[in-house]
Length: 510
Image (cartoon, rainbow, N blue to C red; front, side):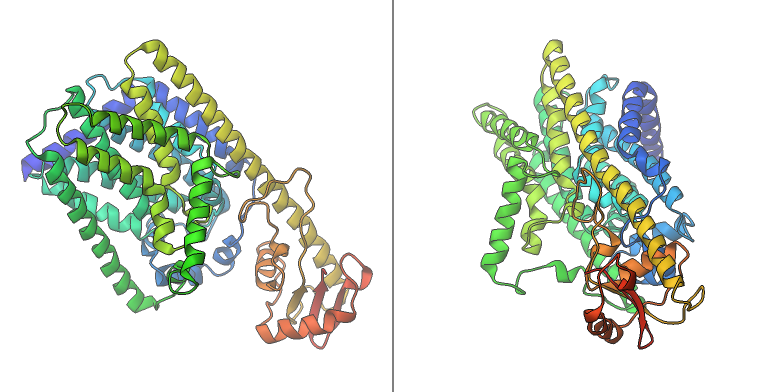
C-alpha cells in the first residue's frame, strides 16, 4: 500500500515538474484563455436561466439533483458558492479552464512517452480546445460554468489514472481515483460521459504511436487486454453514477428533463435519423458559427495514418484502426444516443478531437521546420476561434445591457400606474421583444433577449427581479387572461402598452 501511495506522490511531483518545465506553454494557455473569456470577468452580466439560481437558489439546486446533476450541486456546496455571485463564478470558470488546459496538456504529453517533455507543442491541444466556439454556449450559462469547467478537470484526472491503470493494474489507487472522478464528472454534466470516451480513446491512440516509435515497451497483448480494461472500468464508473443518481433522486424526486432530450420513440425514427445526419453534415463540413472546417482535414489525416499503418509490420494494427474509427466518430455518439442533432452546449468532444489530432500532427513530424509551420497555422486557428467566441460574448453583453435598459423603462411605466413601488399584482408580458443591437451575432441562447421568449413571462420577470424589481410572476391562467385583455391594447412603446386590468399588470409587446 505504501508503494502505491508513493507512486501516486511521484505522479503529482511529475505534474508539478511538467508545469515548471513548460512555463512558456502555460503562459500561452493563460493568454488565450483571458483573451477569449476575459470579457466575462471584466463586464458584469448574467445569462438566461441564471435568474432562477439568483432568485430561487435552493430550488435550482434541488432541480439539478432531480435530473442527475448531483455532482454539480456537490461542487457548488463544496466551494461555498451560495449566494450566487456572477463575478466569482466567471473568475473561477476562467481559472478552471486554465487548469483543465494544463491537465489535459499533461495527460496527452505523458502518454506520448517522450523523454523531453519541455516543448511548445504541449500548448497545441489546450489553445485549440479552450478557444473552440462550441464552448461559448456552455460557458455563457454562468450559473454552472465553473462547475462544468471543474468537471472537465475531473475528466482529465479520470482519463489519466485509468490509462495508467491499464498499463499498471497493480495500483488500485489509480482505479479508485478514476472511478470517483468519473462519477463526480458524469454527475455534474452528462455530456462529460462522451468527453471521457474520446479521452480514453485518445490515450489509447497515443500509447500505440508511442509504442510504435519505441518510446515505451509494453507487455504482450497490452492493446487487446487494455480494451477490456477500458470497457470494464467505464461500465463500472457509469453504473456507479447511475446508482448514486438513483439514491439522490430518492431524496429530491425524479425529473424527466434529461430523459426528455432522447427523441427515439417520441417522434418518427426517420426524423431522428434526418436530425443526426444533419448534425454530422454540420460537423464534417464546418457549417455555421460553432463548427470548424478544420475537423474534416483532421479526421482525414488520422484516418490515412491508421490505414497506412495497416501496410506495416506493426502488431495490433486492426485494433489501432478500430480505435481511430471510433475516435473519429465519437463527436457524433451523443447525437446517435439521443436521436437528435445536438445543441452546441452539449458538444464537448467535437473540439477535443480537433485539438487532439492537431497535437498528433505536430508530434509525429520530425522536421523542425515542418513542426514550426504547423504550429504557426495552429496559432492562427486558435486566434480565429477566439475571435468568433469574443464576437458571440460581445453580442451577449450588449444584449444584457439592452435588456437592463428595457427593464428600467418597463419599471418606470409600471410605477406610473400608481400601484406602489412593489405592486401586489402579477405582471403579464404579452408577446415578445427582440433586442435591437447592430451587428448582433446570435447562437442558441447567446444574443437572445429575456423578453424574446413569447408567451413566457417567467423568464423576463425573473430577470427583472434580479435587478431589484420585485414583481409577482403570473400563473398559467393569469397569463392566458392577460393575453385576452391585451387584444385591444397598443404595442410597446405606445403610451397605453402598459395597463392595469382585472388585477393584472399587462405589458404588451406585440
